[in-house]
Image (cartoon, rainbow, N blue to C red; front, side, top):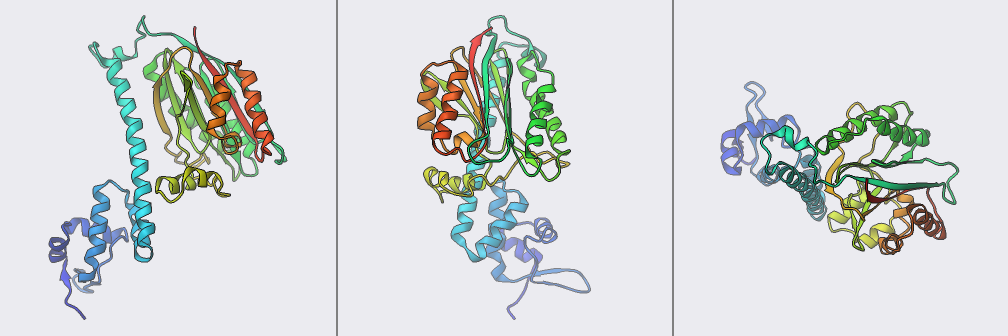
Length: 359
């Protein structure tokens, strides 16, 4: 047998610390080649250095330990697959960083010229007081036996949910109702807190539905600030000056493959497993961490929130012209659902259309 390296020698050879090596052993990421049965001292083989360095590199880019274990296991049999997994992880990091950057920029803008944190919540008399002129439309589609989508369209709150499981309809309806029951804040600084509280209430509502869950995408407005909370693969779009911008990222296995460069968006749209979720409200003890964002709206903007019964069959290049034509929200929602039905409408559809107008 090749000579074993002590934990100290192995740490120096790999650039890791003995403390880190002991932690990786406890977590099963990097087991020693041998443990002395009497002293408990750890020894490592030279060929373990490559895995040790990989673990160290992945920790340096901030990858969670559980995910590192999956990447390392994949690397042993499929190096290209491990590379794709790292690329997908980093795409998520960049997306989340961009979202946090927007939040930080919004906070900076609110605090300019103020003397304390409390003042960022005060309504600036020059800030536009906007509201939604909204409409919602639900359609069962052409193949599903029941409606499991739900939606809300109010002057300040928009939401869509896509339920799944034996009580998926109740899960979606309960989640939207719980979110709608949370008091709408009047101050922009309270928006994200209100949405997070609403998602916790929604998750508790879903817990009452056996073996079921739901996606949830919600938009909450105060002044000219829009807070967005998103879990799953329903979507939110913003139309401004004729340009359509998608505000959410799908929490799906297929989206991970797109992020990893393994699939093109066009290939992803044709995948039969495109709706396989990585994140949803499932009533668990720990709600999934939502994607949160804060945006500044203008009068004349138009928002679309929809479930994948629309977005999976009607491409964005057709959604944009329908939104741009200027028909009222209800008529536009009917047109979009008509387009889904023209393509077979294989799923339920929830569509919320809102024009942003001055109060």
